[in-house]
Amino acid sequence: TYRKCPKKFYMEKFEGQEQPPRTYTQVGIDLHEIFEKAVCDRTYHPQQWRKDYESEYLPKHREANLYVDETEEKAFNNRAEACFETFEEVLPSIPTPFMTEVTIFFEVDPKLPKVRFTMDLVTENEDGGLDLHDWKTGKELVGKQLAEDLQAPIYIYGVEKETGRRVDSFTFYYLKDKKIRKFVRVDDNTFVCTVGKREYFIRFTEMISKIQNIFSRMVKGDFNVPNQTKG
Image 1 (cartoon, rainbow, N blue to C red):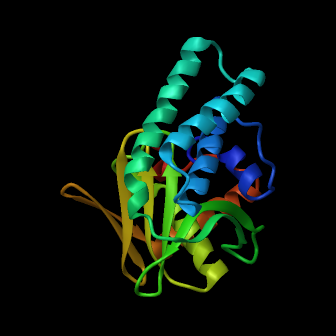
Image 2: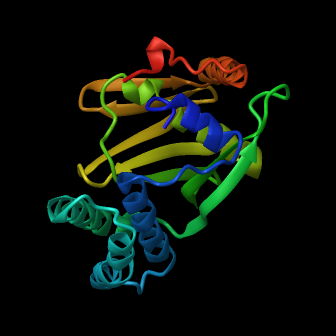
């Protein structure tokens, strides 16, 4: 959200002003509701996910005139089905939830307003640490975007402050594109995501400093996106 619209990010994350959902956003919200239920109740089967989406969510979309025409509705239904297919594949590997869809308020700097975000899923691992999981229904991040995007460091930092526990990994599930990108902690200050032969690093101290600088500018009304965070 920050890279696409810094001001919208500020209004939602700092001021708690949720903006009216666009078609992409609303479909994503609805799919997340089904995913959360499926993660928490493994007897909630894939066939029922699809029935519920068709009988409960689609009528609301039509009532709200969410789609421009039947062609757009079909395109979004195809997107939803692609997400269901990937989610069905990855769900068996997901551990029992520790927290789901939890909203966290935290500060990156005492001089700045608190930030809020909702974490899709937090699980515990055998070493006593936490693993974060984020369902994505839109386009995947590629290349340097993986290391320069603000979401992973913000969420890791916030969850650690909220729970007092160490986060060991952050996994993005790009369901529509059937891609998984996982950042794994390699030391106290570094996470790495390996894609093929390439490695993308998050240097935690460096990123938090960058985030503090960006947020400080936003509070002052400067919503220009730094070049290194565009993508």
